[in-house]
Image 1 (cartoon, one colour):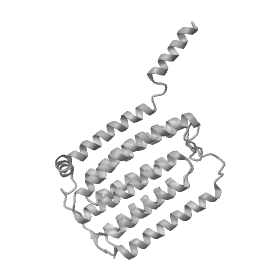
Image 2: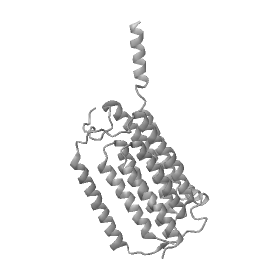
Image 3: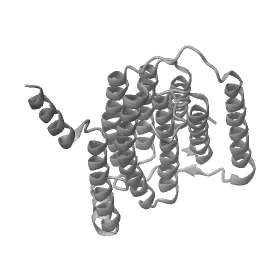
Image 4: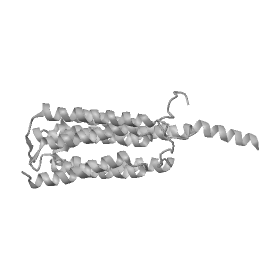
Length: 183
Length: 100
């Protein structure tokens, strides 16, 4: 019994799987990043199907927008889009594939034997995952985790600036002193 | 209505391809992207079960995972730039010494 919802889900699931595999197998890191953007956008559509419009839009703006732009920026900054030519770890690749397949088989067996739910996900009521409902819950019940997340973001920003500041104030002062001694 | 196993299976496939990417790839940036793929698989599972049990807490957890992932990406990419400055490469085989 193929309902319309199942067919739509199947199409998007195929896009998700194909873009994940494309990210995994593409040699060029920029193509990998673009496949990942496609993956995130398609998963956002699945969030819409599951009745989570706020999370879907956050997924598109934060993940597919800012995080992947940051990735592309760093890839182009470092010029790291091509893999190194030589592959000295040839047989490790097969071991990695083997581990991946074993893990996949394990999870699939878990899904087949242990889950056994066979229940359908009902589409929630329209106001379930709306921005208003999520915001009310976020600022009332989950206010403390929200504040802690903001603190984590500030710490991460300061840490990223500190890591990449280059020579820093002290180093620049020293180069100025050296330049003035040369004169 | 879509059976819940479909979503769980899709999440499993995404997670396994992420883990295979971490094991398989040598470009550190692609390894990082595979980590993001695994985050995404876990988020899909959270949203699925939030819809299944009609509980909003699952969606809020996804929100927190996303913000922490954004912070992690910022610090991680800064580390990557710094490693590239010292090693002139982001091949993860080169990252084998603690002292630059």
